[in-house]
Amino acid sequence: MKMPARKPEVVVVGASAGGVEALLGLFGGLPAGYGLPLVAVLHLPDNRESLLPDLFARRLALRVKEAQDKEVLQPGTLYFAAPGYHLCIEADRSFSYSREEPVHFSRPSIDYLFESAADAYGAKAMGILLTGANQDGAAGLYTIKQRGGVTVVQDPQEAQVATMPEAALALHQPDYLLSLRGILALLAELDSRPC
Image 1 (cartoon, rainbow, N blue to C red):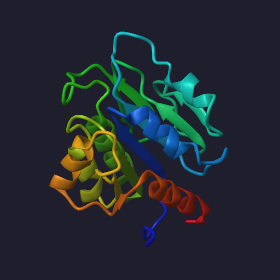
Image 2 (cartoon, rainbow, N blue to C red):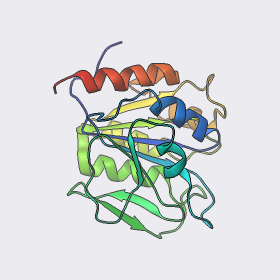
Image 3 (spheres, rainbow, N blue to C red):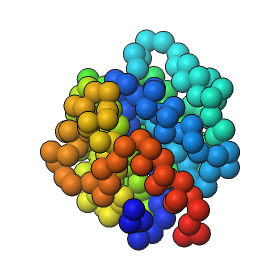
Image 4 (cartoon, one colour):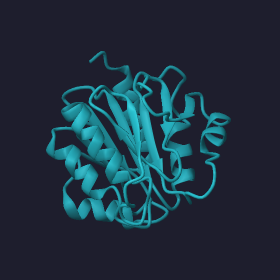
């Protein structure tokens, strides 16, 4: 597999229907102390507290937590967006939250996160779009591509729900179209690179 020209400084990931299983499969193979910050938006109802950090922390070697307002991103940590809020990465590489209108009926929105990562990191952002039942994330992934970042789409044939990966493929040709196993191999290889 051809590697990106430069090592990204952040990995942003979006998923919806089928996403818990996909994210567990993807991040379950990464070691504690992984060298990049990982930020995930998973569509969930916004009327209750998210149990995702606890669920994932019990099953992953990575440090897992809900992103906090003004918190600076740290390598080796998987951050989840809080339910009911859009998660944004600011220019100083810290998080902020917004209650702006839902995007594709979703808050948090994958597009919102991806577009903010493209603004904050430019060509040093990597976006990964996984299984899901709407088009959220496709436009944001395209924004990452336009800013020179690396884009990855889960193979729709493997995705539990193909709508989200197919929406991304309809907008642009990603740098990588891979199975979850292939995406994990890519992330592991990137971590082993010095720069």
